[in-house]
Length: 304
Image (cartoon, rainbow, N blue to C red; front, top):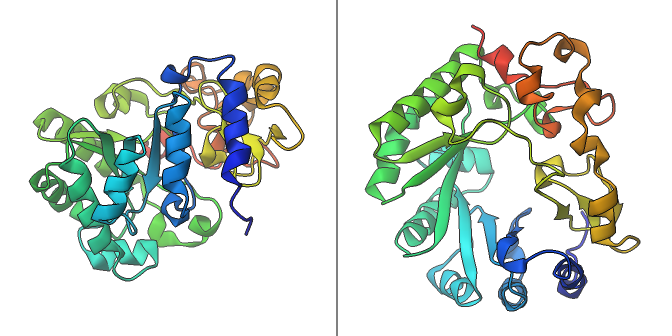
């Protein structure tokens, strides 16, 4: 496990970025791991905000006490995503691997939903153990005042590849799409499917805009060890450099070609797919970083 990057090292990157972009129009999102594990998170937020960048975070909510939440708001927190993955502790705590995490997440959701002018959403990873509870989870969120709910699925990689309970069948995936579509039509809560994967005819039924993998195009990242990447979902894949050896903006301007020219993805099943012009090989995190082969095709899942 890599130690957390010193705050000062990341701030140097922001100082360089601010000479080439408008900080007010560049969002900084802190994710993990778990950001709340950093004792200096508020100081980090203050320094980011002081430089003119709006900032937000993605958290499991376990450590988001009322006092911690207020201190983060005072440090300039402008957006937050809370993960809640079940109707109760049985399903959520199983998924998170930590007893008591559901109750903490619910309390975090309540605090966030009750805060005026804060951009937020709640995300749920749909799996075989919670898919039957989606209607009840929806009603729970509505009762808590939640207005934005993002649902997603786990792609078959790492530990998720070895756990069949984390993978939806084709029938279950279609069921999820229909649930999101019906929930959007109902209008009580704004539900959407996550950004990964082209969904064919479901695209604008379950999303606000068509699929487009923004990794390396609109999204860049600095990982905990200083690696320069794109969407954090790529993790160690597609590393473009390191802030301890490279200038971030030089890397951003001169590299990332593998993400900006997707022609290399038109192989295997993608080579003859009629939908390729829309998805351009799907989300990069859904591809094997060694072979380039696609690991998960959402269109396949939608063909029952």
